[in-house]
Amino acid sequence: MTFTAMDWNLGGADADADRDTFNTMTANLWTPEQVSLADDAEDIHGLKDAEQIALSRVFAGLSAIESLQAGSATRSLSSGAERDCTGTRQAVLTAIAFAESMHTKAYSALIAVLDNASDNTDSTNASNNAPVNSTDSAAHTGRANDSTQSPFAWVQQNESMQEKLRLLNDVYATAPNSTDNAADLSINPAVDSTQSKDTSADSSSITSPTEIATPNVSASDSADAHACNSSRDSSPAADLGALKRLAAAVLAEALLAESGFYLPMWLSSRGSMTKSADIIRLINRDIVASGSYLGAVYQQKLEIFDDITRESMRQYVYDLANNLYFAEEDYSYELPYGDLGLEDDIEKFLSYNANKALSYLGYPALFPAEISQPNPAVTDELNDMESLASALKPASLFGGSGISFGSTASASATTRTPSSSTATSTGATSANKAEETSDDDWDF
Image 1 (tube, helix red, strand yellow):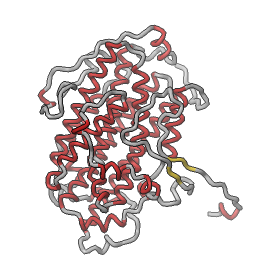
Image 2 (cartoon, rainbow, N blue to C red):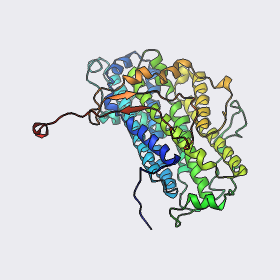
Image 3 (cartoon, rainbow, N blue to C red):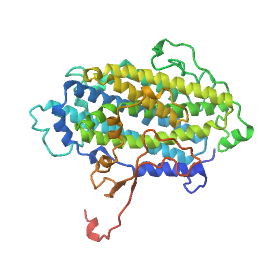
Image 4 (cartoon, one colour):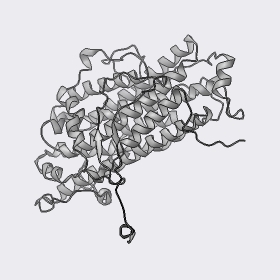
Protein backbone atom coordinates (compact mmCIF):
# COMPACT_ATOMS: atom_id res chain seq x y z
CA MET A 1 0.00 0.00 0.00
CA THR A 2 1.32 3.43 -0.97
CA PHE A 3 0.59 6.45 1.20
CA THR A 4 0.16 9.83 -0.47
CA ALA A 5 0.23 13.47 0.58
CA MET A 6 -2.75 15.76 0.17
CA ASP A 7 -2.03 18.08 -2.75
CA TRP A 8 -4.04 21.31 -2.81
CA ASN A 9 -2.21 22.50 -5.93
CA LEU A 10 -3.91 20.09 -8.32
CA GLY A 11 -5.84 21.51 -11.24
CA GLY A 12 -9.20 20.47 -12.60
CA ALA A 13 -12.85 21.02 -11.80
CA ASP A 14 -12.94 18.56 -8.87
CA ALA A 15 -9.97 20.20 -7.17
CA ASP A 16 -11.48 23.65 -7.76
CA ALA A 17 -14.78 22.60 -6.20
CA ASP A 18 -13.00 21.12 -3.18
CA ARG A 19 -10.93 24.27 -2.68
CA ASP A 20 -13.92 26.58 -3.08
CA THR A 21 -16.04 24.67 -0.58
CA PHE A 22 -13.19 24.23 1.92
CA ASN A 23 -12.46 27.97 1.71
CA THR A 24 -16.14 28.74 2.23
CA MET A 25 -16.45 26.46 5.25
CA THR A 26 -13.29 27.83 6.88
CA ALA A 27 -14.22 31.45 6.11
CA ASN A 28 -17.54 30.78 7.83
CA LEU A 29 -15.93 29.64 11.09
CA TRP A 30 -17.81 30.79 14.15
CA THR A 31 -18.58 29.65 17.68
CA PRO A 32 -21.76 30.08 19.77
CA GLU A 33 -19.73 32.07 22.32
CA GLN A 34 -19.52 34.90 19.77
CA VAL A 35 -23.29 35.47 19.91
CA SER A 36 -24.64 37.04 23.09
CA LEU A 37 -27.87 35.35 24.17
CA ALA A 38 -28.54 37.71 27.07
CA ASP A 39 -31.39 39.43 25.23
CA ASP A 40 -33.08 36.09 24.60
CA ALA A 41 -32.94 35.29 28.31
CA GLU A 42 -35.30 38.22 28.82
CA ASP A 43 -37.56 37.23 25.89
CA ILE A 44 -38.08 33.75 27.31
CA HIS A 45 -40.25 35.12 30.10
CA GLY A 46 -42.66 36.39 27.47
CA LEU A 47 -43.01 33.01 25.74
CA LYS A 48 -45.95 30.70 26.32
CA ASP A 49 -45.16 27.42 28.04
CA ALA A 50 -45.94 25.56 24.80
CA GLU A 51 -43.43 27.75 22.93
CA GLN A 52 -40.71 27.11 25.49
CA ILE A 53 -41.34 23.36 25.46
CA ALA A 54 -41.40 23.15 21.68
CA LEU A 55 -38.28 25.28 21.31
CA SER A 56 -36.20 23.18 23.70
CA ARG A 57 -37.32 19.95 22.02
CA VAL A 58 -36.61 21.35 18.58
CA PHE A 59 -33.06 22.30 19.56
CA ALA A 60 -32.43 18.88 21.15
CA GLY A 61 -33.77 17.11 18.04
CA LEU A 62 -31.57 19.21 15.78
CA SER A 63 -28.58 18.33 17.95
CA ALA A 64 -29.39 14.63 17.52
CA ILE A 65 -29.44 14.96 13.72
CA GLU A 66 -26.18 16.92 13.64
CA SER A 67 -24.51 14.47 16.04
CA LEU A 68 -25.26 11.62 13.65
CA GLN A 69 -24.01 13.66 10.72
CA ALA A 70 -20.74 14.60 12.43
CA GLY A 71 -20.11 10.95 13.35
CA SER A 72 -21.59 8.18 11.24
CA ALA A 73 -22.16 10.22 8.10
CA THR A 74 -18.65 11.67 8.06
CA ARG A 75 -17.02 8.26 8.53
CA SER A 76 -19.00 6.66 5.71
CA LEU A 77 -18.51 9.56 3.30
CA SER A 78 -14.78 9.75 4.07
CA SER A 79 -14.37 6.09 3.17
CA GLY A 80 -15.92 6.79 -0.20
CA ALA A 81 -13.60 9.75 -0.72
CA GLU A 82 -10.60 7.50 -0.01
CA ARG A 83 -11.73 5.10 -2.69
CA ASP A 84 -12.07 8.00 -5.15
CA CYS A 85 -8.52 9.10 -4.33
CA THR A 86 -9.77 12.61 -3.66
CA GLY A 87 -7.64 13.63 -0.71
CA THR A 88 -8.88 17.21 -0.69
CA ARG A 89 -12.46 15.92 -0.61
CA GLN A 90 -11.68 14.30 2.73
CA ALA A 91 -10.53 17.69 3.99
CA VAL A 92 -13.84 19.22 2.90
CA LEU A 93 -15.74 16.48 4.72
CA THR A 94 -13.65 17.15 7.83
CA ALA A 95 -14.55 20.85 7.64
CA ILE A 96 -18.23 19.96 7.28
CA ALA A 97 -17.99 17.60 10.27
CA PHE A 98 -16.35 20.33 12.35
CA ALA A 99 -19.19 22.70 11.49
CA GLU A 100 -21.75 20.05 12.45
CA SER A 101 -20.02 19.51 15.78
CA MET A 102 -20.09 23.26 16.38
CA HIS A 103 -23.80 23.22 15.62
CA THR A 104 -24.40 20.67 18.39
CA LYS A 105 -22.50 22.92 20.80
CA ALA A 106 -24.69 25.84 19.76
CA TYR A 107 -27.89 23.87 20.31
CA SER A 108 -26.73 22.96 23.81
CA ALA A 109 -26.08 26.65 24.53
CA LEU A 110 -29.56 27.55 23.26
CA ILE A 111 -31.18 24.91 25.47
CA ALA A 112 -29.10 26.07 28.44
CA VAL A 113 -30.35 29.65 28.17
CA LEU A 114 -33.93 28.39 27.95
CA ASP A 115 -33.44 26.33 31.07
CA ASN A 116 -31.62 29.01 33.02
CA ALA A 117 -34.27 31.62 32.31
CA SER A 118 -37.13 29.29 33.21
CA ASP A 119 -35.41 28.30 36.45
CA ASN A 120 -35.01 31.95 37.47
CA THR A 121 -38.53 33.29 37.28
CA ASP A 122 -37.64 36.27 39.46
CA SER A 123 -35.64 37.62 36.45
CA THR A 124 -32.57 38.21 38.61
CA ASN A 125 -30.29 36.27 36.30
CA ALA A 126 -32.35 36.78 33.16
CA SER A 127 -31.53 40.50 33.11
CA ASN A 128 -27.79 39.88 33.41
CA ASN A 129 -25.97 41.56 30.52
CA ALA A 130 -23.21 38.97 30.44
CA PRO A 131 -23.42 36.80 27.31
CA VAL A 132 -24.58 33.24 27.78
CA ASN A 133 -21.65 31.35 26.34
CA SER A 134 -21.38 28.15 28.29
CA THR A 135 -22.97 24.77 27.80
CA ASP A 136 -22.02 23.55 31.26
CA SER A 137 -25.61 23.65 32.43
CA ALA A 138 -26.99 21.81 29.41
CA ALA A 139 -27.25 18.59 31.37
CA HIS A 140 -29.51 20.39 33.82
CA THR A 141 -32.11 21.37 31.22
CA GLY A 142 -35.81 21.12 31.89
CA ARG A 143 -38.77 22.37 29.83
CA ALA A 144 -39.91 19.11 28.32
CA ASN A 145 -42.89 16.89 29.06
CA ASP A 146 -42.59 17.84 32.72
CA SER A 147 -40.19 19.70 34.97
CA THR A 148 -37.97 16.67 35.50
CA GLN A 149 -37.45 15.43 31.93
CA SER A 150 -34.78 17.16 29.86
CA PRO A 151 -35.33 17.75 26.13
CA PHE A 152 -32.38 15.45 25.46
CA ALA A 153 -34.13 12.65 27.31
CA TRP A 154 -37.36 13.41 25.45
CA VAL A 155 -35.57 13.10 22.10
CA GLN A 156 -33.99 9.81 23.16
CA GLN A 157 -37.41 8.42 24.06
CA ASN A 158 -39.34 9.87 21.12
CA GLU A 159 -40.03 7.11 18.59
CA SER A 160 -40.46 9.44 15.60
CA MET A 161 -37.12 11.07 16.30
CA GLN A 162 -35.44 7.70 16.69
CA GLU A 163 -37.03 6.49 13.44
CA LYS A 164 -35.42 9.36 11.55
CA LEU A 165 -32.05 8.54 13.04
CA ARG A 166 -32.43 4.83 12.28
CA LEU A 167 -33.33 5.50 8.66
CA LEU A 168 -30.17 7.56 8.22
CA ASN A 169 -27.90 5.29 10.23
CA ASP A 170 -29.02 2.25 8.22
CA VAL A 171 -27.71 4.03 5.14
CA TYR A 172 -24.45 5.14 6.72
CA ALA A 173 -23.82 1.73 8.31
CA THR A 174 -23.38 0.05 4.92
CA ALA A 175 -19.72 -0.99 5.08
CA PRO A 176 -17.94 0.92 2.30
CA ASN A 177 -15.38 -1.83 1.75
CA SER A 178 -17.79 -4.73 1.82
CA THR A 179 -19.33 -6.23 -1.30
CA ASP A 180 -22.41 -4.13 -1.91
CA ASN A 181 -25.27 -5.63 -3.87
CA ALA A 182 -28.80 -4.73 -4.84
CA ALA A 183 -30.23 -5.80 -1.48
CA ASP A 184 -27.71 -3.62 0.38
CA LEU A 185 -28.89 -0.61 -1.57
CA SER A 186 -32.57 -1.01 -0.78
CA ILE A 187 -34.75 0.69 1.77
CA ASN A 188 -38.31 0.18 2.87
CA PRO A 189 -40.21 2.90 1.03
CA ALA A 190 -43.02 4.62 2.87
CA VAL A 191 -44.85 5.30 -0.37
CA ASP A 192 -44.23 5.34 -4.07
CA SER A 193 -42.47 8.60 -4.94
CA THR A 194 -45.21 9.58 -7.35
CA GLN A 195 -47.97 9.52 -4.77
CA SER A 196 -49.23 12.73 -3.29
CA LYS A 197 -48.54 14.13 0.15
CA ASP A 198 -52.13 13.49 1.21
CA THR A 199 -51.68 9.72 1.01
CA SER A 200 -51.00 8.27 4.44
CA ALA A 201 -48.39 5.58 4.98
CA ASP A 202 -46.85 3.73 7.87
CA SER A 203 -43.19 3.22 7.02
CA SER A 204 -42.87 0.51 9.63
CA SER A 205 -45.43 -1.66 7.83
CA ILE A 206 -43.74 -1.60 4.41
CA THR A 207 -41.80 -4.72 3.53
CA SER A 208 -41.12 -4.55 -0.23
CA PRO A 209 -37.78 -2.87 -0.96
CA THR A 210 -36.81 -0.82 -3.96
CA GLU A 211 -34.06 -2.80 -5.66
CA ILE A 212 -31.26 -1.27 -7.65
CA ALA A 213 -29.67 -3.51 -10.24
CA THR A 214 -25.91 -3.70 -10.62
CA PRO A 215 -25.09 -0.82 -12.98
CA ASN A 216 -23.34 -0.94 -16.30
CA VAL A 217 -20.18 1.17 -16.25
CA SER A 218 -17.62 1.41 -19.02
CA ALA A 219 -14.27 -0.20 -18.29
CA SER A 220 -12.42 3.09 -18.72
CA ASP A 221 -14.73 4.92 -16.32
CA SER A 222 -14.37 2.23 -13.69
CA ALA A 223 -10.60 2.12 -14.04
CA ASP A 224 -10.26 5.90 -13.82
CA ALA A 225 -12.50 6.10 -10.77
CA HIS A 226 -10.45 3.56 -8.80
CA ALA A 227 -6.92 3.95 -10.10
CA CYS A 228 -5.47 4.99 -6.73
CA ASN A 229 -5.81 1.79 -4.80
CA SER A 230 -6.58 -1.40 -6.67
CA SER A 231 -6.80 -3.33 -3.41
CA ARG A 232 -10.08 -1.62 -2.56
CA ASP A 233 -13.44 -2.84 -3.79
CA SER A 234 -13.92 -1.18 -7.19
CA SER A 235 -17.22 -2.80 -8.09
CA PRO A 236 -19.93 -0.58 -9.61
CA ALA A 237 -22.22 -1.59 -6.75
CA ALA A 238 -19.77 0.02 -4.32
CA ASP A 239 -20.19 3.25 -6.28
CA LEU A 240 -23.94 2.96 -5.73
CA GLY A 241 -23.33 2.60 -2.01
CA ALA A 242 -21.39 5.87 -2.06
CA LEU A 243 -24.23 7.53 -3.96
CA LYS A 244 -26.71 6.28 -1.40
CA ARG A 245 -24.72 7.77 1.48
CA LEU A 246 -24.31 11.11 -0.27
CA ALA A 247 -28.07 11.31 -0.89
CA ALA A 248 -28.82 10.48 2.74
CA ALA A 249 -26.42 13.17 3.99
CA VAL A 250 -28.05 15.83 1.81
CA LEU A 251 -31.56 14.81 2.87
CA ALA A 252 -30.56 14.78 6.54
CA GLU A 253 -29.36 18.37 6.43
CA ALA A 254 -31.61 20.08 3.88
CA LEU A 255 -34.83 18.19 4.68
CA LEU A 256 -34.63 17.27 8.37
CA ALA A 257 -32.35 19.86 9.94
CA GLU A 258 -33.68 22.84 8.04
CA SER A 259 -37.27 21.84 8.82
CA GLY A 260 -36.37 22.30 12.49
CA PHE A 261 -35.56 25.95 11.86
CA TYR A 262 -39.21 26.96 11.52
CA LEU A 263 -40.05 27.76 15.13
CA PRO A 264 -37.02 29.95 15.99
CA MET A 265 -37.51 31.85 12.73
CA TRP A 266 -41.24 32.25 13.40
CA LEU A 267 -40.51 33.63 16.86
CA SER A 268 -37.86 35.96 15.45
CA SER A 269 -40.36 37.30 12.89
CA ARG A 270 -42.46 38.34 15.90
CA GLY A 271 -39.52 40.12 17.52
CA SER A 272 -38.71 37.37 20.03
CA MET A 273 -35.62 35.19 20.54
CA THR A 274 -33.72 37.12 17.87
CA LYS A 275 -30.26 36.07 19.07
CA SER A 276 -31.19 32.42 18.89
CA ALA A 277 -32.36 33.13 15.35
CA ASP A 278 -28.92 34.59 14.57
CA ILE A 279 -27.32 31.29 15.56
CA ILE A 280 -29.79 29.39 13.38
CA ARG A 281 -28.87 31.65 10.44
CA LEU A 282 -25.19 30.85 10.96
CA ILE A 283 -26.02 27.14 11.02
CA ASN A 284 -28.18 27.47 7.92
CA ARG A 285 -25.32 29.17 6.08
CA ASP A 286 -23.11 26.14 6.77
CA ILE A 287 -25.84 23.74 5.66
CA VAL A 288 -26.39 25.57 2.37
CA ALA A 289 -22.68 25.27 1.58
CA SER A 290 -22.37 21.60 2.56
CA GLY A 291 -25.67 20.54 0.99
CA SER A 292 -24.80 22.20 -2.31
CA TYR A 293 -21.38 20.56 -2.33
CA LEU A 294 -22.50 17.03 -1.44
CA GLY A 295 -25.39 17.26 -3.87
CA ALA A 296 -23.02 18.33 -6.63
CA VAL A 297 -20.69 15.40 -5.87
CA TYR A 298 -23.69 13.06 -6.03
CA GLN A 299 -24.71 14.38 -9.44
CA GLN A 300 -21.19 14.05 -10.78
CA LYS A 301 -20.78 10.46 -9.57
CA LEU A 302 -24.19 9.54 -11.01
CA GLU A 303 -23.20 10.62 -14.53
CA ILE A 304 -21.06 7.55 -15.25
CA PHE A 305 -24.02 5.15 -14.98
CA ASP A 306 -26.47 4.09 -17.64
CA ASP A 307 -30.05 5.34 -17.87
CA ILE A 308 -31.56 2.29 -16.17
CA THR A 309 -29.30 2.64 -13.15
CA ARG A 310 -29.85 6.38 -12.92
CA GLU A 311 -33.60 5.79 -12.91
CA SER A 312 -33.21 3.17 -10.17
CA MET A 313 -31.21 5.61 -8.09
CA ARG A 314 -33.82 8.30 -8.66
CA GLN A 315 -36.51 5.99 -7.31
CA TYR A 316 -34.31 5.07 -4.37
CA VAL A 317 -33.75 8.72 -3.45
CA TYR A 318 -37.46 9.54 -3.66
CA ASP A 319 -38.29 6.53 -1.49
CA LEU A 320 -35.75 7.63 1.13
CA ALA A 321 -37.04 11.21 0.96
CA ASN A 322 -40.58 9.95 1.51
CA ASN A 323 -39.53 7.85 4.49
CA LEU A 324 -37.74 10.77 6.09
CA TYR A 325 -40.58 13.15 5.25
CA PHE A 326 -43.22 11.05 6.99
CA ALA A 327 -40.97 10.44 10.00
CA GLU A 328 -40.40 14.19 10.26
CA GLU A 329 -44.12 14.84 9.87
CA ASP A 330 -44.92 12.40 12.69
CA TYR A 331 -42.25 14.08 14.80
CA SER A 332 -43.79 17.51 14.23
CA TYR A 333 -47.16 16.22 15.43
CA GLU A 334 -45.57 15.31 18.77
CA LEU A 335 -44.24 18.81 19.28
CA PRO A 336 -46.85 21.23 20.64
CA TYR A 337 -47.22 23.07 17.32
CA GLY A 338 -50.96 22.45 17.43
CA ASP A 339 -51.22 24.54 20.59
CA LEU A 340 -49.62 27.40 18.66
CA GLY A 341 -51.78 27.04 15.55
CA LEU A 342 -48.73 26.29 13.39
CA GLU A 343 -49.38 22.75 12.11
CA ASP A 344 -50.37 23.82 8.57
CA ASP A 345 -47.38 26.15 8.28
CA ILE A 346 -45.03 23.42 9.50
CA GLU A 347 -46.25 20.97 6.83
CA LYS A 348 -45.72 23.54 4.07
CA PHE A 349 -42.23 24.28 5.34
CA LEU A 350 -41.43 20.57 5.47
CA SER A 351 -42.63 20.06 1.88
CA TYR A 352 -40.60 23.06 0.81
CA ASN A 353 -37.43 21.66 2.36
CA ALA A 354 -38.02 18.23 0.83
CA ASN A 355 -38.19 19.83 -2.60
CA LYS A 356 -35.06 21.87 -1.91
CA ALA A 357 -33.08 18.81 -0.78
CA LEU A 358 -34.07 16.97 -3.96
CA SER A 359 -32.98 19.96 -6.04
CA TYR A 360 -29.50 19.71 -4.48
CA LEU A 361 -29.41 16.14 -5.80
CA GLY A 362 -30.57 17.23 -9.25
CA TYR A 363 -34.15 15.92 -9.02
CA PRO A 364 -37.54 17.59 -9.64
CA ALA A 365 -39.79 18.61 -6.77
CA LEU A 366 -41.69 15.90 -4.93
CA PHE A 367 -44.52 18.18 -3.77
CA PRO A 368 -46.49 20.62 -5.95
CA ALA A 369 -46.09 24.34 -5.43
CA GLU A 370 -49.56 24.84 -3.97
CA ILE A 371 -48.73 22.76 -0.88
CA SER A 372 -45.06 23.70 -0.50
CA GLN A 373 -45.16 27.49 -0.20
CA PRO A 374 -43.70 28.31 3.23
CA ASN A 375 -44.64 31.26 5.39
CA PRO A 376 -42.70 34.17 3.79
CA ALA A 377 -42.08 35.72 7.21
CA VAL A 378 -40.12 32.58 8.17
CA THR A 379 -38.05 32.35 4.99
CA ASP A 380 -37.35 36.09 5.07
CA GLU A 381 -36.03 35.71 8.61
CA LEU A 382 -33.89 32.72 7.64
CA ASN A 383 -32.29 34.70 4.81
CA ASP A 384 -31.91 37.98 6.71
CA MET A 385 -28.35 38.89 5.74
CA GLU A 386 -28.38 42.18 7.62
CA SER A 387 -28.99 40.35 10.88
CA LEU A 388 -26.42 37.71 10.02
CA ALA A 389 -23.80 40.36 9.34
CA SER A 390 -24.18 41.77 12.86
CA ALA A 391 -24.63 38.46 14.66
CA LEU A 392 -21.01 37.87 15.68
CA LYS A 393 -18.84 39.94 17.95
CA PRO A 394 -16.23 41.94 15.98
CA ALA A 395 -13.34 40.03 17.55
CA SER A 396 -13.52 36.34 16.73
CA LEU A 397 -11.76 33.55 18.57
CA PHE A 398 -9.64 32.82 15.51
CA GLY A 399 -6.87 35.39 15.59
CA GLY A 400 -9.06 38.41 16.27
CA SER A 401 -9.78 38.96 12.60
CA GLY A 402 -12.96 40.71 11.57
CA ILE A 403 -15.53 38.77 9.59
CA SER A 404 -17.37 40.24 6.64
CA PHE A 405 -20.39 38.54 5.16
CA GLY A 406 -21.33 38.17 1.52
CA SER A 407 -24.62 36.91 0.17
CA THR A 408 -25.86 33.50 1.19
CA ALA A 409 -27.45 31.23 -1.41
CA SER A 410 -31.20 31.29 -1.13
CA ALA A 411 -33.03 28.21 0.01
CA SER A 412 -34.24 27.57 -3.51
CA ALA A 413 -30.86 28.08 -5.16
CA THR A 414 -29.98 25.59 -7.85
CA THR A 415 -27.05 23.29 -7.24
CA ARG A 416 -23.87 23.33 -9.18
CA THR A 417 -21.82 20.36 -10.21
CA PRO A 418 -18.13 20.09 -9.34
CA SER A 419 -17.40 20.96 -12.98
CA SER A 420 -18.04 24.59 -12.04
CA SER A 421 -15.04 26.33 -10.57
CA THR A 422 -17.35 28.50 -8.49
CA ALA A 423 -19.29 25.67 -6.88
CA THR A 424 -20.81 26.39 -3.49
CA SER A 425 -19.45 29.89 -3.27
CA THR A 426 -21.76 30.87 -0.44
CA GLY A 427 -21.01 32.51 2.84
CA ALA A 428 -18.25 34.69 4.11
CA THR A 429 -14.68 35.69 3.66
CA SER A 430 -12.29 36.58 6.43
CA ALA A 431 -9.22 38.75 6.34
CA ASN A 432 -6.22 38.75 8.68
CA LYS A 433 -4.72 42.12 9.54
CA ALA A 434 -0.98 42.31 10.16
CA GLU A 435 0.31 44.37 13.07
CA GLU A 436 3.79 45.28 14.24
CA THR A 437 4.86 43.41 17.40
CA SER A 438 7.60 43.79 19.97
CA ASP A 439 9.27 41.50 22.47
CA ASP A 440 6.95 42.77 25.18
CA ASP A 441 3.98 41.36 23.30
CA TRP A 442 5.25 37.83 23.95
CA ASP A 443 5.99 38.33 27.66
CA PHE A 444 3.15 36.30 29.21
